Image (tube, rainbow, N blue to C red; front, side, top):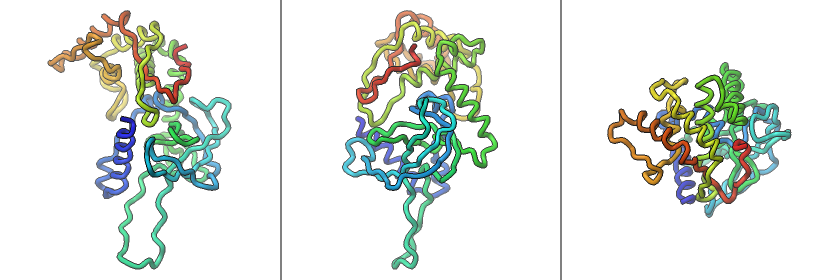
Length: 300
């Protein structure tokens, strides 16, 4: 399973690198909202690129791969730790360097070069980074183009980083977030917790499941049930953290007493009823990975 997942990701990357600019733009994955990026990142920092490793690092492109991938290492000076880098002054972030240009005067027909669309870093670049620990190498990666919010030329940088800080603060103290006077903050906290507990980590093996704290689970379920399921998303764009998308992340089955209504219009009332009826019975199941089974401070 994990091999298939990484092969799929590799296929998407290869497709992105070989399509025409106009086609690639049309096929580009829409960015996840900041709340989901915060909930699923191993480390979030605002920092500056101060240098690069002397040599590339060669590790498997994905677990079980026969061939290895060369990663250039960017050294990031941590200016602000938002999650996962407490007391750390700098971190290593690997990225795939763009291919070198063809040698001048090379024989044969001209090579049509496609634009390189992977994440790269430049010296003195300042950005907010949503990072994931590489499953094989001793460094982080920025897995998607929207894992990097650049400061230069971005008039919304401060606004976006303020949103990151807000989400990170709610996730760091879920009890306060779930008891906030603001209804939007309560739903946002509940949604981020579910995304955090239920995220899949390609390369870390097939997960097992384990229940989270029962009292916390009850608060999360009742918070989602209490939300306005007919309200428009607070921000434009797909994949917004709405009550319905949060509910689907639970991964419920008929064994949990959940039956998908045939009439889609009845989904909100059916889901809200299930949440209220089962808040004392059902406990949210988190994914647990053998290679990454660290204590989750958000349950405290």
